[in-house]
Image 1 (cartoon, rainbow, N blue to C red):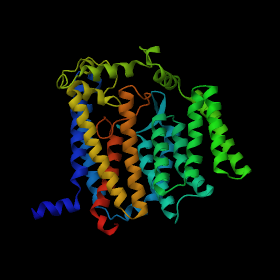
Image 2 (image 1 turned 120 degrees about the vertical axis):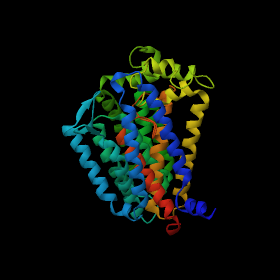
Image 3 (image 1 turned 90 degrees about the vertical axis):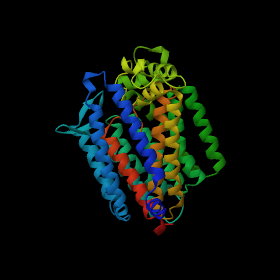
Image 4 (image 1 turned 30 degrees about the vertical axis):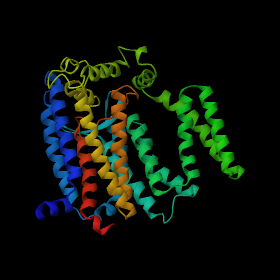
Length: 409
């Protein structure tokens, strides 16, 4: 009994057990979705090897002195920017995106490293501010640190990762204690940009709402005018970004609004994923018995659409079980972030929470058809070595802070 208590005191099983179960479910789904695909037969074995390597990364990270993360924050951020520049220059273009670097037989996505680099860079800057983020200068500098990697990822282009980054940056600012007006300044350009996608009427209505908000905050005329100009520019920039997207990405956004408009093209994956999940029923069709999965109706189902494999073969019960595991994992991460008094560590952990949470919401949302298909994997479940290694590194940081929590609470 004493041994168990000592283990739980230093090692958070509430993090580790859901992680292992999610990984095992992912392995089963990858095996099922690739067994009848000659081009992907080796993916199960690769993911198994990635998992062993990722566990090693997890325990190494868990064992490091906690102050190590403070020392490597800025170098990690700068290194991630360097890799993003390299991939733009010499990366291999796959499916319209220049997001992969290849070293022999090993492929690597710099945007995965950039996730932890961005979190560390923004967290380091915010933790150096002694008070809440209230001044326009602090807000601007925080956004600049976060949006430099966003701009580089846009050049690939990888819209899915961009959405994850933007959401994480906003949550980090909120966690630091940004003022209501500061949050308005940060959020309003995004709202206006999103509204502009739906047409001029929505764009104008959004600008009117922003103008009313600026009037109610009663800031000086020059400052309010500058904020309004930024919002106006955001609307036009959104149109430019949409046109800069590759044709298949534009079709994905259009098919989100109306999937049936192109059922054999951009809307195909979304429609087939919903069919797969719906056909699973309550108990599922059984392992290796999913028709949509085994007949390969969904291309590369072992990556972004892995959740519909679980939904079809393990049914409603399996789908809910995955969500419960994620809920336990996210609650443990959030609790550690909330109880850690060291602001830098707390910011890093809430950033990690944000990455996992946004991935979960967007991935499952696009699988069930309530979000556009933007190519975001399900953490620990989808196939992918880069993603798994970085995710395990991030969870290793959380477990590390739990281990030394008495020094920072």
